Structure formats: C-alpha cells, structure tokens
Length: 132
Image (spheres, rainbow, N blue to C red):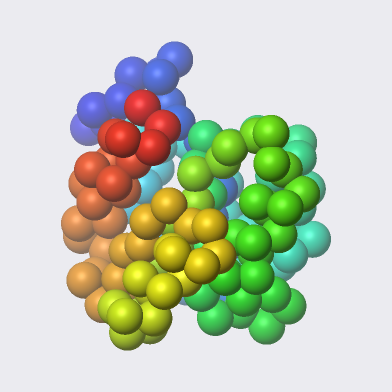
C-alpha cells in the first residue's frame, strides 16, 4: 500500500519521549512507505542523526533531556552545512508551535491534536517544498 517506491523511500528520524507515540507514528509512517527510525533518547537521536543520515527529522516539543526547540537550534548550530529539514510534532498550542518554527530553526509543525490518520499525508505535503 506504499506510494513511495523502494529506492525513493525517504528516511524519517522521529524523536519523542513517549514510546506509545513513537510506536504509533512509526507504524503509520512505515505503512505509508517511509523508512522510519524512532528513538526516545537524545543519545539514540544523535547516533542516528550522524550514522543514518535522515532526510527529515520529526521531533516532539516537550522532552526531558532537551526540548524540541533546543534540539532544532542545536542541529542548526552544529550542522550548518547540512540542511536537515525539521518538523515539530506536538500537542502544544498552535501559536507556540509557530514561535518554535520562527525562532528555533524548524521548518514546519504538525499538531498531534489532529491525530495520526493524516500524519503521513500531512508530512508529505509539508515536505514537498523542503525535501522532495
């Protein structure tokens, strides 16, 4: 049921401190044809970011080790020559998500309040201009 062919599968790196959210997002995005790596810790994230070379990062906003906003800023400072698109996926209020996109260097946001059903389609729509 994938609409992305095998050679064209885009690598998405997900980070969220909720294993339940990660499992649900990972399943929905894998089923939609993405190559997904889901991590719940900053250490796992950094290893995957450097070793796996994702096309896109999807981060939660509220995490214990480093917020999604701090993570966006860190990626932009540490990897300025490698422009990795970052999407913040959170249940935070929309005005807060818009602020993170503007100030922390994220490229877009998606509200978790919209549910998982539209996540793959919404990610593809948001990223057409960013990655593909």
